[in-house]
Image (cartoon, rainbow, N blue to C red; front, side, top):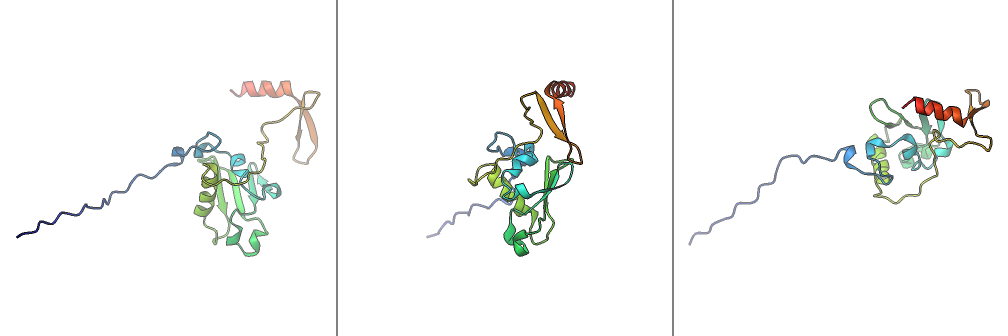
Amino acid sequence: MRLKLREKDKVSTERRPSKTVDDYTCINGKSLSEQTIYDYAQFIPHWDTRKEIGDECFVVRCVNPYNHKNMDEHPSMMISKGEKKNVVIHCRLESCPDIQILEYFKERLIGEVDAPRSNVRDPKKYKADKNGNVFFKTRHGTPFPVPVSVLNKLKEGSK
């Protein structure tokens, strides 16, 4: 009597295409690539202690403080508006890989992790006072009023 052996299913060596950032829909309805600094900021525990070091460029305490000596007492994570990407995030210490930080934010932005969020508003969305003025500050911190009508004209002109 002869036994006939079945062939084992061959394991595919083809690489499956991985998801791109546009394949993820975040909890705010935008794709992952459309998120802004302020969308990320709501998941940064110490956002209120951030230091602005440039136009839309901030240094904050890292979201993975256990990778740092002294629990990242001296802020080391940079978050800024990028040229090719909306948001660029980088921790300046080698002991904290960027992939870990990106995974932290991805899990929270797409809702895999139900994490507490801080109330962060985009400063581009201003509210007027009772006289119809929005107050801005100069580089030196001096406030100056701008009428809402002027802002609306500027807004219409940029479209």
